[in-house]
Image (cartoon, rainbow, N blue to C red):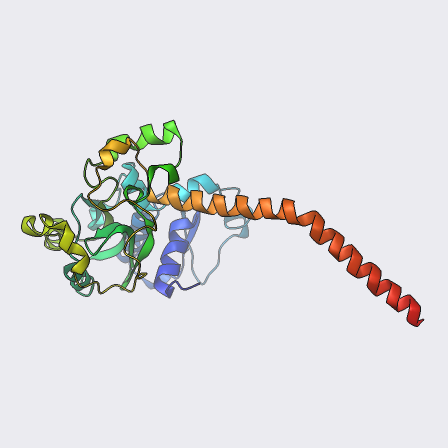
Length: 301
């Protein structure tokens, strides 16, 4: 597990159905409300329990029957914000959230510089982004406390040939409205959650990282931009579509996280197929080895 401690703890809070706030006797009521509001900002649906000296009724944390995998996957506030179902109840404590979205690419050096600057008030951020220097790669970003992480998370569907995409009419119909005639599914989509956020300043900082109109006019030069992120060397999907291909002609849309799940399913199916094909042969080989070993043992006796 390569996650930082801050990321690990934040994801544990996001995934939890019960959160215990301990040592409540050591802080003021206002401070306690702010702590609870912060937890609510990260996980709006968790059941909060106050405790002193770690004293908690076992029935409230063990065998509660609260866990639900589907609900847990929708529980983090950043997921609800993306889905448009997050209704902040913590604004009285200055905690708020918003989603930064645009269809233009980031300049790699400008966005990299922004990641190295302070982000006042931001306690959690997560989303996907795309860089001009790697137009086929889906970028993944998350911030937890003072820790920030970025990485390549596969390829945008716009870079993948149509015959390599899911052949599912319902899937295509669901996402058709999100398809850009030039960029396909490429976009910036980052959720920001924090305390006393200056939303206008944060949006302005993101906007300053985008390619200018003059830079966007020459996509053939994007690959020459300095790429300060430690991503894979390949700049495009093997055998994929060149950037600038008229993706509107494909009449198909896709979504990165579905791509990753489908890839995992394909890998699992391939493993299962190999097991079915190779299984009987391996079983016979194993039986033969056991028989030979047993025969030799008997000969020595």
